[in-house]
Image (cartoon, rainbow, N blue to C red; front, top):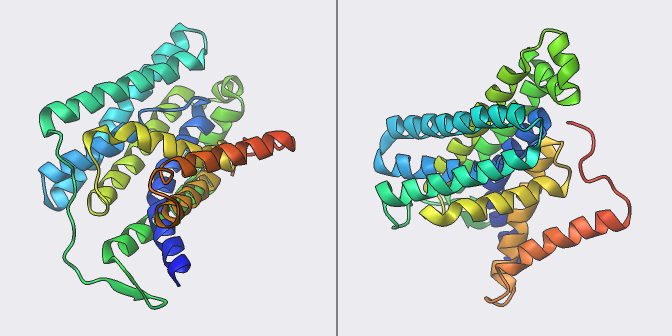
Length: 283
């Protein structure tokens, strides 16, 4: 039962990681680059929601995250055009923007943790007490993951996003506004990250410097099952959450932080040794 409890709690935590990993893959699928500021959007949204309580504050937090992501989207487009498609420049620029957001949060919101615990009684699952907010957050995450799938495969925007990734030049010739589609993807990624920030605020909480660890952890989850697959990226985030929970519960304290990253490295090394493509077809 103790093992099962850590697995369940890890899966609930992993939904938040998955919700951050999913937009990482979405941006990669559409633009071929990685937005390393995704964790900064999460922290920024949490800080804004913490400073402005209530549903209005939540909505404001998500909007602020979308605005921040749109800045990176515009910057990505300009740098891609300026440096003739050099994706490394775009990735480094997004990391620099993440550092700016981190400094902004530290300056205007302080260094104290952002957390808002609910006083609601826990719910029972298989005889285990689970925080009600964790269940709510997991439900929201799963609904959003399903919505991303519907967006990609059942809407015109989703078809344009996949076409822009498969052949940007061909999509442009076919009349698809590739740059606008890519900007829309960045904004969508910001919205998902903003929701993840609000969820984390009402769960474990975070601090101004959580941006980089969140990005690294979620990026590892996204890479695990294929960076070209947003839903697989979500699943990878869930797995990372389970590994992190098991490490915290059963491993020595000095190894609990290291083991999730060691797990990611082991999975990638296993794939490389067996010739498995780490970024397969889009899904």
